[in-house]
Structures are given as C-alpha cells and as structure tokens.
Image 1 (spheres, each protein chain N blue to C red):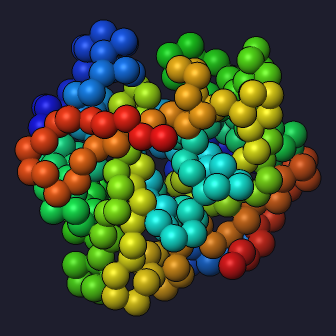
Image 2 (cartoon, rainbow over the protein chains, first blue to last red):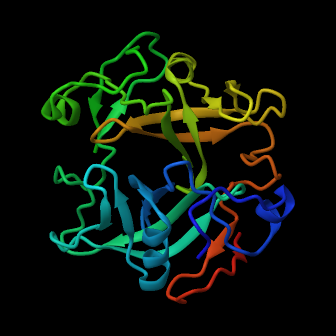
Amino acid sequence: MPKPTPSDAPADDLEQGSILTPRFDRDGLIAAVATDAATGDVLMLAWMNADALRLSVDTGIAHFWSRSRAKIWKKGEESGNLLRIEEMRIDCDQDAIWMKVRVEGEGVACHTGARSCFYRIVPVGVPGSTRLTRGS
Amino acid sequence: MPKPTPSDAPADDLEQGSILTPRFDRDGLIAAVATDAATGDVLMLAWMNADALRLSVDTGIAHFWSRSRAKIWKKGEESGNLLRIEEMRIDCDQDAIWMKVRVEGEGVACHTGARSCFYRIVPVGVPGSTRLTRGS
C-alpha cells in the first residue's frame, strides 16, 4: 500500500493506469463513501488513512480513520453493524473511494439509529432556505 | 447560508434539528457526492464552499469549488453535462452532502469521458494487491 502522501504519478498513469495510487490529503486521509449495494442509497461518508484503506481491502470489512478519536475505526465493531464490502472503486484522480456495502447486524449504518446518515433533505430551488425536512 | 466555519451548534440540534448548519472544514469546504438518480451509481465526489452550496441549492444545478483552480466550478458549464439535482441531503453531523442528480448533455460526469469517475475497481480480499481492474 502506497504511503499516505499525494501521488506524483503522471496524470495519465493516475487516471488510466491499473495501479492503486491513492492520493491522500495533507492529513493523510482520503474520502470514502459507502452506498447500499442493494438500493444505491448513500449510507455514510467518512475518511480512511492508509492503514484503514489497507485493512478494508485486505478484510473486505470497511475500516475508517476516526478524526475525533484519532484512531482506526472498524465500523460496527461494537454494534455488529459491520459494512461488508461487495465492491470497492477509486475515482479518476484517485482521491476518493466508493464502496458498495451490505450492512450486517441490524442493517443500520448511522450512529443515530438511522439506516443512512443522510436522513434529512435540503430543499432545492428555494433560494435562501435553510430548512431541512426528514427523508425516509 | 451560514458562514464557512465549523458549527458550534449542540450535537442534538446538529443531528436532529431542521436547520441547515453545514460544517465546513478548515479550508471552508464540505465533501459532496453525486449519485445517478436513476441507477444509484456514484458519479463523482467533489467539494463545495459556502457559495457553491448556496448556488447549488438556489439553482438546482450542482456547483463545486475547484481546489486546483481556486474558483467556483459550475460542473458541465462548458461540456453541457450539467448535474441537475433531483434531491439533496445532508448527513447526521452536517459535514457531507449527497445529491441525486440527472446528468444533462451527453450524460457523462467524468472529465475522462467516463459516465462515472469511479470506473476502476479495487479488488477486495486480496491482501497486498494494488492492481485495479476496469469496471463498467
């Protein structure tokens, strides 16, 4: 697994190559989004450092870097709501990860008890509005 | 639209409240993921500052902050591949945005010409592997 530093690979290699060359940010992190493999709903967006990414790849269970606790975070380790990775992808410039996951345990991805962390809708096309509505 | 500073709202308000209180990072940015409203595929992950978020909310067309060009970026302004927002959501701690979008023009979200920026698969469960495969 490459070191947690921005890649200096040429853009062509980065975008079209077949070698994993994640571009971590200055904190050594990469954004990782998890969607429900069955529904396509976005469940959560969190951060991985190089170790969390390696653990996720090696084990097939999503691991993140907890910025608040400054430690590796095996999502669902206590609740049982592990995120089993059905497929992992990386984007064109290798600075974002997408995982299609199946939530184990109670099927709940959010610490609030919601299935997805994205349970509130921001109304669009209503200039100036800051009112959120509850989604399903 | 709140200023681009981390919110100091109590956690309960932040997580359960109905007021949009985006928590921008120290660079004044929030991660925004766009999925295809029809298929659920993740198309791209980019960044918004407060102005880009306001423009997205007000117009229903996704705007981002281009970190490389340091300016507002109306995605698809030149190519015609605008991202029309069908629904926008914000996550529990209000530090990530999810948009379900319909790609206009040629239906291509990635600057490489791919429909989605996430066109490469990271094999999972193959410890140590750094080999990417091309996805659909």
